Every structure is written in structure tokens, then in C-alpha cells.
Length: 347
Image (cartoon, rainbow, N blue to C red):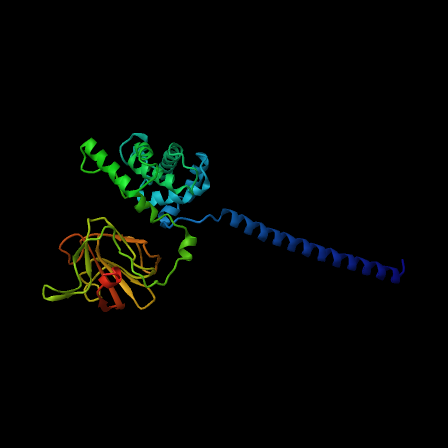
């Protein structure tokens, strides 16, 4: 072969090699794009909103999803089951769903978290079926089933005979009647729905939550009974208003805002004597303080809605009995005003 022919062949091979390299690169790019697109689609499909629960509960999410599938439940029940777990145990201990009694055994008989979840979801599924809940969005009947998780299945029949919908009054009436019948001082938790529902919100709702107060203050407790007003008292200035309430009564945020303090008040740090207390900045020139609580249900930095549960009434700190002390402030650490004109604007 001549030199010219060999050079020509080398040129052809070089061109072919160049085009092959280009095709390989394009193919790899197509694979990467497909993988990214496929991953995004899979993430969007599986990115179900998660209930506002602790990491201790969320560690069992896969176990709940498996139990939901095993019991042929709608995947939309995941949030409410996580919320029940949060209320029952906070994700701590072995019987995280407190499901031993649903098997007829003594409390905490189940010794493995996964077994507790399996039994708890199985029991929940039976209650959903018995209550004829149409799906996760059927809130009226879902609340009947969830309250029955605490009271037992008998509550479903009781609810059916009294209108078919859950109400706090219905739960209290059933609790009282069962306590009398059994000769017990109390029966179950008549506030179970309120306790569970505080965790039954999605992360999307939390992110979209209104952070600024509206200017309209809401009473922080149900059935409020004012036991002490704003003004001079016992030789000092009482800088808020007291609501006499049983220990454990729920306390809610009077306006939307951001929690700036949540803890036990220590003298010298501005919250001495308040016991377990919460301070919320409403970002409109007002702060509210809630004091003497037995349990705090919020933390610093959390954004809360108006009416969202932030704690439970107690008698901690300088307190003479169970009550909620509430203040409305025009400065973070002072300038308290009489809450009455804000909470009862028509008075």
C-alpha cells in the first residue's frame, strides 16, 4: 500500500473514533438525565407529608408503612398512626403503640417496638372497619375510630347511638358512664382526640404556617374562669390574668407567632416564678406569655398557629393552685397590658 492510502485510512479511522466517542458521551448524558428525572418522579410519589412528631417516632416510619400494607389500609392513614404513637409513647420504650391491652394482655406486655406497631395498626384497622370510616379524609368517623383506640371498641356503638359523630361532650359522657359502671375514678382519656390531633399536621402545613399575629386575640383555654385580674394584688402588681383550670387542661396560642421561650423560668433571666412557661412573639408589636404549665408542648423557634396547643395547665413556679397565668406584652420583657380588653373586646 502507498503512503497516501495509509494516511487516508488513518484519517477515516480517526473520524470514526471521534464520532463513536461523541455517541458514548451523548448516551451517558441521556442515562444521567433519565436517572435524575426518574429519581425526582419517585421522590415526588413517595414524598408523603409526615405528621409533626419526634425523631423517636419517625424512626419507625418504615415499620408503620409495612404494617399499613399488611392490613390493606389506605397509605393516607400513616400520619394519624404516627400521631397516635407520639401520644402513646413518644416513640420510647418497647410497646410504642401501647397495644398490649388490645390483645387482652396487661399493659406493656409487648416487648418489641415492631411487634407493638404491627398489633397497634392491626387494632386500628379493625376500628376503622367497625366505624365504617370511608378514608383518611372522613374526619367525623376517623375521630370516632381514634377515640375508640383509647376507649375500646364500645365507643363506636355508643357514638352510633348518639348522632354518629365525635364530639368532646360525647367522649366525656362515655368516659363518665364507664367510670361509674366500673367503679373507677376515671376511664380513659376523654381528651384523646385533642391530644392526638396536635401532632396530626403535616410538615407542609408547618412550613406554610402563618407566622404573624392577626391582631385578634383568642382565649387560650376552653371554658375560661377568671380567678384573678390585671392590677394591684397583695401589695404587688399582677401583670396578667389568671384562668382557673384543672391540671392537664390544654393551653393554646392566642395568636399566630414564633416561640421565643419555652422552659422553666429561672430567676435572673426574666422568667423567674413563672414555672413552665412559653413566650410567643406575634411579630406585630405584641408578645403573649403563658405560665405555670405542667407540660410544655412546643419549643423555641417553633412557628405556631392561633389556637395551636402549646402546653397543659399546671401549678409550677410561684403558684397557689392549678391555673394558667397569661400576659399580653408590648415588649418582649415587659410593658404588660390588661388582657381583658384584648380577649373580651366587647366588654
